[in-house]
Image (cartoon, rainbow, N blue to C red; front, side, top):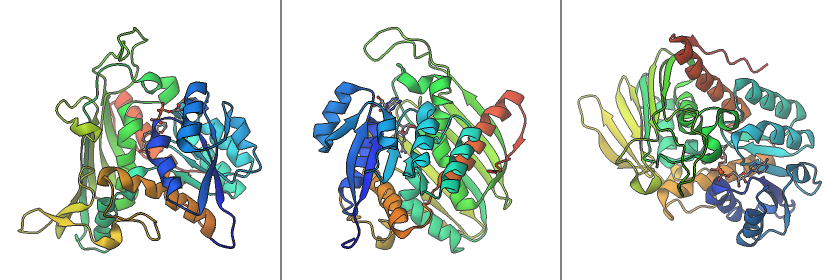
Length: 370
Ligand SMILES: NC(=O)c1ccc[n+]([C@@H]2O[C@H](COP(=O)([O-])OP(=O)(O)OC[C@H]3O[C@@H](n4cnc5c(N)ncnc54)[C@H](O)[C@@H]3O)[C@@H](O)[C@H]2O)c1
């Protein structure tokens, strides 16, 4: 990086996810710097200026989108503004990493993909779990044929959240959907990364909690979105998939990390990933027993990442590699992985879950990005 200027990053949305992994990811990567932030919550903006050590701050996202001294933007706002904010940044030539779900539906996400592609900027969907060491190693085992022909994929994501208000996350016009767009969409994405495209699905969602009270006991409009989401599906390669997610799985709190299991069963063997133990995988061969094996060192971080793969809270620190991938793609002038195309295709499958449940029918995935 000595002969090149640093990638100057702006963040739109100074909430939880920016603080949890985007800002730490920027801090450890000396090829980039955080130069500006935006959030309409002025008190939070002031707090973040001092916490994150940044002087340029605005409540208006257009100030970030049009700032000539910003090269790249991380959009980490409520789902309903991802589209307009990302499009404004793209129009002004900024590279964009946007949080998932990219939009409120496939049409919005596909539009975002086309805009970024046509403008020639880098685009990335923040699908965090692709960066977990164990997920990367399971992928390696699948792609090198170590498990034989992949036959089944399954994922379970169980959280034990309070049944009080989720804020913007519980209204359809702000979030699009509940657990499905918040949690299961990640698993839809990484299943396709492991197994290839999903061909058709049958989905279901359910809502149990009214969430008509805030955590401090105030009344609020009730939730409109799912607490539980599930699908079964067939991949184009003939493999089958089963996904289940819920935020109401009592006893699965586990300091907020919940429970996560994702597994591939092939004709020769099986391999499983757990979010709560991401530096180990569980592997078994035909006739044997599933056993825990450490992830080899070369899979603990993505290539070049400044992280020490053996340091930090394992379920947290792999998330810093998202920024590393975003900046690498900018510096190396190549596509980010996962891009907006992956975000849009996962969203097409997630939309199809709602569509399938409404019709009580199987749905073929039609994710033509145009
Ligand atoms: N990739 C992951 O693992 C992961 C984890 C958590 C959240 N997320 C996603 O990140 C996004 C943000 O989630 P969060 O948990 O940080 O939410 P949050 O509510 O904590 O933060 C959102 C922030 O955006 C701000 N905001 C609202 N409207 C805005 C606007 N018009 N312009 C600029 N800022 C605005 C809010 O004031 C708030 O500070 C969501 O899309 C969510 O799905 C992804």
